[in-house]
Image (cartoon, rainbow over all chains, first blue to last red; front, top):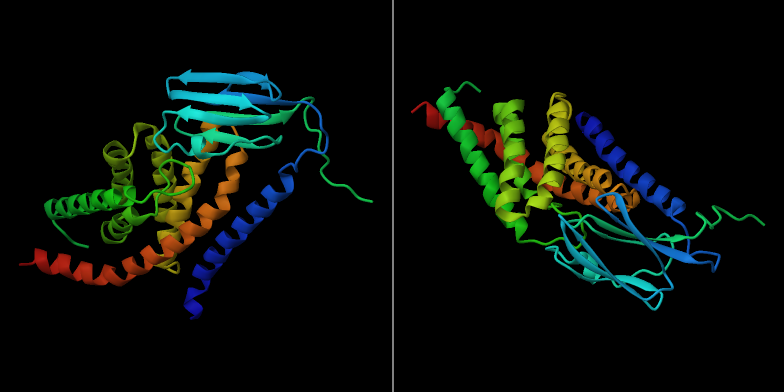
Length: 129
Length: 172
């Protein structure tokens, strides 16, 4: 049994790092925004900014690139993929986002749809009373 | 293992064919979350076998070639870059860890699985320039751990019998 100690160390390190990443993500992800300020929708294609729109608008946005075609709708305070020509359609299945910090990503088409607060980060990292 | 080059090449070819079939089986199983090319890791079995039977270079060759061919045959071309990134990192780390005799085959397999997922995730983060994808990592790491352990267990069990079969077959 003692000869399996190095293996155990490796396995446990992987588990530990997974949990560490998980907690890190939990802590650094912004909560539902505390402010009711304006939110903007940013769309990027292949890492490059594609466009910015207000969440309050009603808009249909066609995103066409060499990676594919997608149709993104902003309607009723939600953003969602109406259609996309990617094979997995996970982006379309996503019901839509409405809070800042949330994202929908279509990996095959390399489209990232983001919601941000106007004026950068409006959330607090922590509140102590 | 002492083998004539032609026999060696033939066996590695068989392992490659085997990994393509396993790749097909993998492609039949869709995964709910979303990084294209994320697989359950069956097709790593021949890579592990070739690493321990024939050495690091055949394993590397097998891993890269398998990623390319499987992406062409069963995936889409878009997923190839992610698969390649994953396969590259995975096989490199497997070769590294297999150098240490005190780290056994199942663990090396786990390393391979986890780093395959990590490589794909890193490539996706790099291409999309967003770090939000990291929230997939814990799930990917843990599932890689489980699948890698299972696959590694199987590999460990069959590696000696396969060695015997290969050698016996050659010495006819």
